Image (cartoon, rainbow, N blue to C red; front, side, top):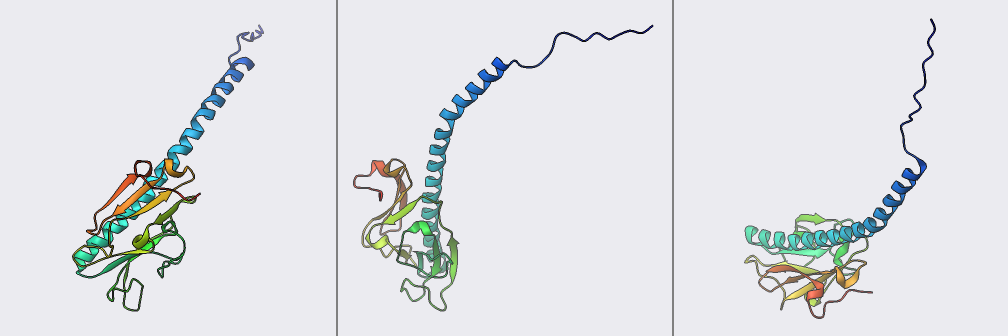
Length: 187
């Protein structure tokens, strides 16, 4: 006896309407979520850059005290072999033992830390004495004449910007630029 198998008339799967509704919901979530994610990513990069630079300064201070020598942190060229005066701190920086206290890397000066450029789209510009370098003395004090600041900005301008302040005593802190009168970002 030959039995034919009957096909089950109930099909499993999704209808075209269900698929379209799912795609519309996904599109709405992406439209709302992607800009918020980008903003959060920019803020995170901003905080990381500010923390890295302040950390570099505190490292230089600790090394100056620990080694009982002058230690300088300066903006560096892309090869991280020399201090530069052009551009901003976003290009990267290096820390070195500055035995002759001239703020430049000479024969006999030891480079003890190098930091690459920060994320694209950021600028890091400082006031007067902090524009190119900061030197810590063997007692941890700086070469600064007063409290100086460095503003780190991204494409969102002053809304996301961070300000690093460093005092004559070598104390550093990070503040939101929008909370500091007079802080500005280049346009």
